[in-house]
Image (tube, rainbow, N blue to C red; front, side, top):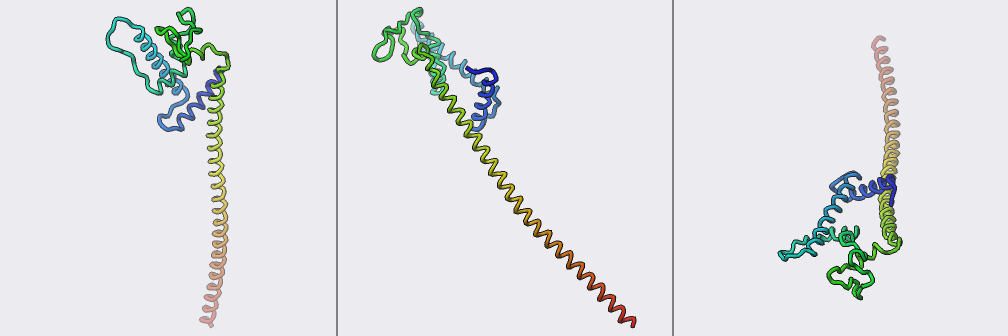
Length: 202
């Protein structure tokens, strides 16, 4: 249970992690829409399969097979329990569990793993907290790697700039020496020419 601000930050973190896996690239709002669409699509399949299992009149089986990813989402969101809610008012007695973990009434058989999460104490929130902590650790690890890479880049640039500065200083010194000797040569040539003209006049 998150506030609107915290939820937005959470989806931004999820978007960063998903975008780091490669294309497609989406912002947090679009990734949230993808998740909502997936949940809606899978819940419709689970609901249709439930209707097919209780349908009468014979005919071919029209149940839709869910992929592994869809099964994982269905278990995460407890869709089977949503379309087949537990409770006495729906004809299910949670006390009539067999050793195999199913309701004794075969017509209304429901796996315990689909029922228990809805009737247990708030301790069920622990896995979500664990997942949240894991996601936060992954996000922090990504930020640390990015910060470390930037730090290495800037240190390298500073080192290269320092090396370039040293080279420029050497070049400047060399150019100053060349300028000095060029002036000296010019003065000597000028004096020599002056002496030659003096001799010629004499």
